[in-house]
Amino acid sequence: MRRARIRELRVMGYYVGLIVVMLSALMVIPAITSSIQREWPVAVDFFLSAGLGATVGLGLMFLAPEGARDLTWTQGMVTTASAWLLGMMVCAVPYYLSGHWLSFLDACFDVMSGFTTTGLALVQDLDHIADGLNMWRFLLTWLGGQGMVVLAITFFVRGLPGAFKMYVGEGKDERVMPNVIHTARAIWFVSVVYLILGTVILTSTSISIGQAPGRAFLHGLWMVMSGWSTGGFAPMSQGVVYYHSLLFEIVTVVFFTIGSFNFSLHWALWNGNKKEVFRNLEVLAFMLTSTVLVAISSWDLARAGVYPTVVTLFRRGFYNLISAHTTTGFGTIYARQFALEWGPLALVAITIAMLIGASASSTAGGFKGVRVGLVFKSIVQDVKRLLAPEQARLAERFHMGRETTLDDRIARSAMSIILLYIAMWLVLILLHGGYAARFGWDLPSIIFESASLTGNVGLSAGITSAALPSVLKVAYLVAMWLGRLEFLSVFVLAGYLLKGWRKA
Amino acid sequence: MKRPDKTGADLLRNLAGIGLEISLTVLIMLVGLLIAIFVTRGSF
Image (tube, rainbow over all chains, first blue to last red; front, top):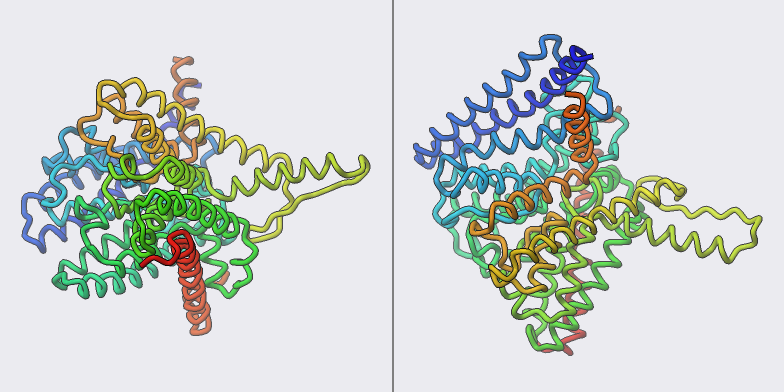
């Protein structure tokens, strides 16, 4: 029994080690960036960190002499959740060595924020960090958007038997194509095409607003990486405000909104299935909720005279609302302005937008529009059943790639996930409440910040900072991890550890 | 299994898909702009 368990741990360790080795290998990219920019100490930090990560990863792989084996569903989920945790620690080493993060916990926080495409940051003196470190921040966000496991399946785990179960553990339960490896490749194909297209457009935009070509290229690349992944990191502490450009804001809205679409939708549209855009439940739900929430917030902001003209309302009201709804987190106002300037109705609208989030199987967070649509349809179905004759058999259908009958199992699953997100939001509100008097936080700011964490958004009402108590930093970190992996694999990991501890 | 980037026709279909996705985001922005015009009574 004990021997079987050790063997099981070794097989899972093999996959975790493989992902850690992959992440360590990727440190070559920021190391090269730093070398080109002659940031020698940072380049050395990256090479040292890569060596450390590779040693840990290869060590785990060598512990499983039989190599890759098929995984059970439990093992797949445990492997994914563990890979995210160990990967976070390895990727945080160059941050910590740079001295721009006050502690290793802060460095881990920013890595998890990047991986989960949240965008909250504890980095110190962001405006003066090395380009290599910025490259690492944005690379982690971009990888996190697609998923680390997706990357591993595309380039490293090809042909290995446990791939699909790890893929599901990463919160993506759809196959864009029949085979999981081809699905992962399709995700990367779409992402790379948009990265190239977005970089060309945003670099040109940055040059047009006065940046030097080299700097414009780096900012263009980083902002597309962050925007497409619905991440929210920006290279300057002022965020999008730094660019002072309506054109820049319009281009970023385009890319982060597209990034929030389901990869299945991208693939359908890219292969000539144009009708999908008019029938897809997620697209319809997003159009409906974004219109209603933009209307509510705009009306409240205009009524209060916060942004009295069309252009300011569009740039400050619409932009931030859509940034919240797609769970991106780019802001065109400073953090405290949400709490100090936005009225209660506008704050409620943006909070709801952050909680709902965008599409399932996309780079975005939140409990996803499709689940709201499914619950709504399920309620409609129940009402219809009550109104119809008793012998009538009614079946509600929905379209997401294909027509599907809405059964109780699908409705229950959607409802459970929504309830888990709401429970996490409430727990975060309660946790903040415990420190509110000490830090002077008001309730609207707490509700806003907790929603931003729950939906992996990254907009802040000014609460998130390096001065947060460690307990809250850990709670934030866990919330980001839970939200991105959609609970299941983290719960399975917790259950697995508990089971192991009881047996020990 | 169809390869993602195999032929010229596939490339054209991909480009049309990108165009459609960009159009969708422009539509969302237009809705936002119309709402802004409506609630501010067209104040520029």
